[in-house]
Amino acid sequence: MREILRMIVVLTLIGAVSGLALAAFHRFTAAPIEYQTIKFVKEPAVKKVLTGYDNDPILDRKKLVVGTDPRGRPVELTVFPAKKGAETFAVAIEGSGKGFHGEIGVMVGVSKEGKILDIGITSHSETPGIGSRVTETGYTDRYRGLPAKKGVDVDAVSGATYSSKGVVAAVNEAVGLVEKFKKEIF
Amino acid sequence: MATLSAEFTKGFWRTIPPFRLVLGLCPTLAVTTSGINGLGMGLATTFVLVFSNLFVSLLRRLIPNQVRIASFIVIIASFVVIVELVMQAYFYPLFKILGIFIPLIVVNCIILGRAEAFASKNGPVMSLADGLGIGLGFTISLFVLGLIRELLGAGTLLEMPVLWEGFEPFAFMLKPPGAFVALGVLLGFMNLISQIQARKGGGR
Image (cartoon, rainbow over all chains, first blue to last red; front, side):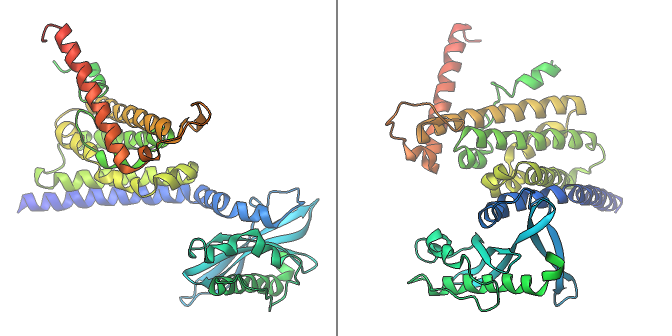
């Protein structure tokens, strides 16, 4: 009996100490991990859709609370502003839409004047060679210069209608957010 | 008999993993597609090995014999998570490449093997030396194996092209079967060297 008690106590202690240590460590590395993820996943897209800025849009990123999820927690949205001097002249914002195989993440650059500068695909799992063609500049260039208002639509890539629709939905979500939070963003 | 330096240096040749122990083959074969990947995997494993050895050794009188494996695994897993977080925070590209093989360090036989066979029977200083030696041996093995496969499979060393123009890389070497071949040939050479040494030393 004493033996069993000792086993339980020792194992519990080891587990508890490990758990505490890891929780502390997790807190300590959370910020750099977020930065790295943004840098390697989002930065290429941000750089593609914004030009002519003299700040670091990744470092200057802003978080907006855009609503609450079904469990009542705030939904945050990250905005990457492009500044010249101290003035924000454009932002990159990410939207997502349903493609043929799951969500497509699209970074959309929107100027202060309300024009789409460019878009870049951040994440997708579309069929290689078919749906994946929506990531090519031949398709993404079609969005350049369109007014950044809900209802954006461009010709789909032939054979990749669902993927194209996903991108359109993502772009509309992003420009919709810019429209809605224009005051906070610029 | 067992001195500190002997425990440290045995990991470099006499019991160098994965060649002599032939343990931990899964990461060895999977991630050594380039020198850098091998080095990263080796160092991550070394970190876990050193600290798990230290803690297992410190706690060896406290841990009841019946639950020792469970305790070792908890200790090892904690350090693996630490490695994973650190890599994600500071070496993101490497973290992406090594991917699933970082969490799998938990079940690396070398680490559990050293905890069970050495650290749970020896003092903390000895265990540190043992962990560091075996870990660095593992790192060297993975690094060399990675360099060989990278050279033959991609024609580069540490991502710099070193072979002549028009060299056609053996893509086979970067595939899992190529890993087996490279490992086997390297192990063969090591045995050959050992045999020659033994003969010179008069069958010592």
